[in-house]
Length: 281
Image 1 (cartoon, rainbow, N blue to C red):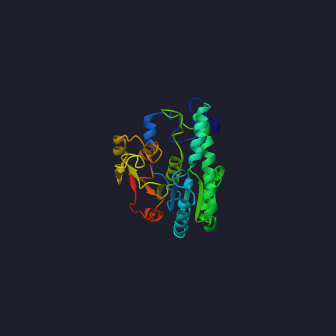
Image 2 (cartoon, one colour):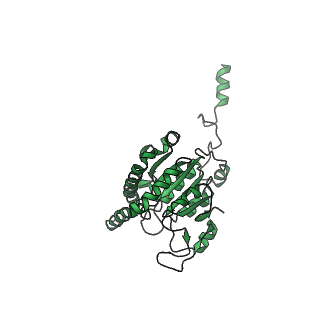
Image 3 (cartoon, helix red, strand yellow):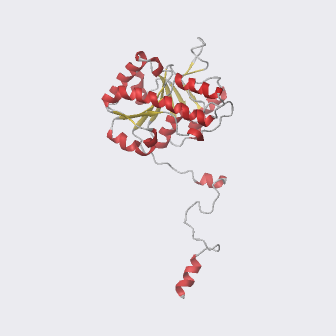
């Protein structure tokens, strides 16, 4: 009888058993609850460096751009653990154009774009295979990345985040906002990697498109708030990256470098300022 009374006292008034936790019975939409979760994050792969290789800017240019970069990566792989993400390039633009003409929603467009980025990952991965780089299928990337990066000097994957049909609808138009620049950034942020480097075909960020305006000036370094204030009409990276960096917990910056100057890549991974640094405020 005493045991039954003791058990009854342990039960809450609603007669349900609850798992004790800081979020028990709390609304996850409450601002105070949200702020209470602002705690340190464990970096899972702090020794890795994430590199995004542009599809249109690098891989679409063929041998003249890709082979020198492969040689540079082969040297870097001797001393660095690399996670390499690839963009889709001109084929992604073509399929996006057709998809928009057919009236396909943003989520479907995002799924179609993944296919082309994955194709470029296999192209570049094949060239890097002699140096031990492993191409990881998207389905197992999130779970198996720590294992593969311990077993091989580098891994390669498509840079698109796996949002697919869950991709957010952009404020303007239907082009998926989270593309390969954003995907590789989110990967580096989640795993707490050492650096995130965007390899493009320009020296960095300019105040205007340098391919259209010969008077465009290079911006060597800029913060998120400064970049927002400039409100540039075009950027050499996914615009959503500005918000992602502002909200990041582990990454404090990313760097844009010119992949047509492959020697810059190793220097960037060593922490040198060789392109444009975009910093969190």
